[in-house]
Image (cartoon, rainbow, N blue to C red):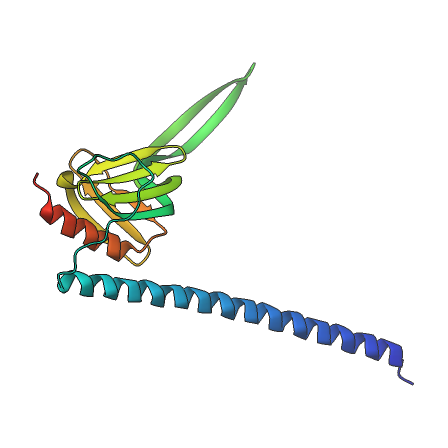
Length: 195
């Protein structure tokens, strides 16, 4: 004769597992929907920005909580931007044998190789401002000022921007922003700046 209590407990556990799986799936779907909605909003903002530039509508200044020059105007400001820099990392490998000769002394023979490679490393988070003459990053640990006249190359995707300047060896990158809008704004303002 089946034990109805055991069967009921088993059914309850099954219902609980199915409920948890459904909640997990809904959480994944809602997270994917939120990311998709954010991507659509970034695309809409980008199209609005491009259409405004093409129509000749003047840029609107934004408030800037930094002290900037009297003849300088800020056109972009965003908090929570991540600042990244390319840093050189060295990877060392040793092959061969080592022998302990006593008293904490060891002798090694073989071959050591090292390889340097560039790697993006997070510097800090902070606020990014784009004015008509420079890009200003005001971070928690480090600040960065890039004159528009010294910018050599700007590349961007949906959420980040990479900038190469005359006075820096490596690219700097800013993430967690609408990279395409900032790129096009920099290119537009750079065309208006006298070097």
